[in-house]
Image (cartoon, rainbow, N blue to C red; front, side, top):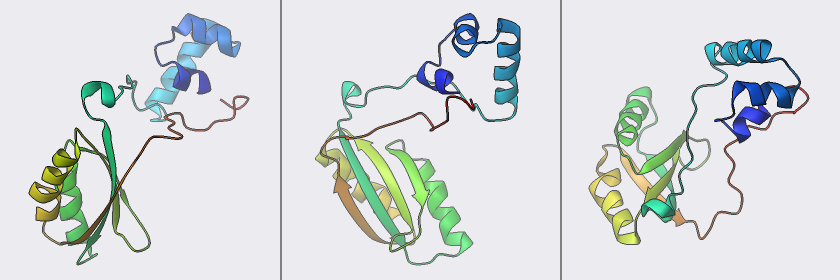
Length: 147
């Protein structure tokens, strides 16, 4: 798992050599992980700033109701916004936390005013802007001896 997470484009031959297996059992093991849903997808990681999206906002949202109907309606709406990279249902003072990527503060204002606060049931929005990433990982922590 650790090898695949660090290089999703690695060939089966090279992966087998790195983990000490022959190619056939290695490929069989990878296929089993894919079929079991442990490996969901293979992607390329893109630098948002290189695509003109240098602003990262963390947005906490409170709804005026927390029943299934309100939660489902919010989740359906926010899932359709391409600016929203992540959305988590939370405990504590906010119901949701979003990670939003935009081109500028003006673009964030447009997102906020034209999309987010227009969702029925949104009662409070609190935003914070990232100055820079300190730690950003995409690999799930796995013990290299177990994976």
